[in-house]
Length: 284
Image 1: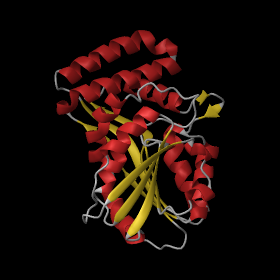
Image 2: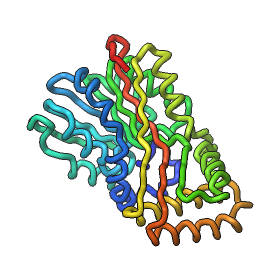
Image 3: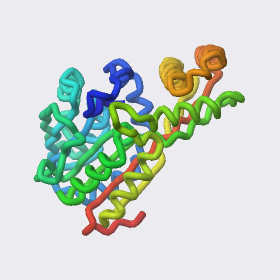
């Protein structure tokens, strides 16, 4: 997850080390099939605003997969993450055109259409599930009114499949999903509802919305990522439902031992959205 605009949201798990650890899994999961209709929309010289950019993993993945001269504006509240991101984007695009990068510390939930003037593409990764319904609705309105495209990737969907299965899996998943939808700082987060809410918000404004699955698929060769994800997943579940702790502690130890032994596989659901302005017609 990348740093969210609101200071009321915990920054736990947003350390650069975690973001770099998850980057290969993110890259493998991203829905590359959404890029062809995006390429058809973008001009030869365009500006991208990356919201909640974190260490810039989406920019590193995307800039080299799109042709044309690119101007990236990176947005985040965390200045340390902005420094990482600005320094690490590729210097050239798919066709060898240049990339330039600037970073702006800002509240991404406050962006409106006027702020997006001159922008062709708005991007975000692992962000929508950290927003509220009103914030997603406002973002949709800003993007559509500005005539931008949007590529919104890796929002959690709540689906987790672990192999081999364990009888406690459903209880942990349900508590975690409830935690993702919690009220924090007076804000009700969307969590696993984010993709549906965003798709509906953009669709109501007449935009073309394309959806794709972007699940993490973690195998035995990703034991460290499995470990850190498991600790965060179970920890959030227990925070939401403290009475789970006695069985959850035993469950977590069992799962961690399986991950270390190379015996665990995990499919962790995420969803991607490509949004094109109302004037564009694209086949799904």
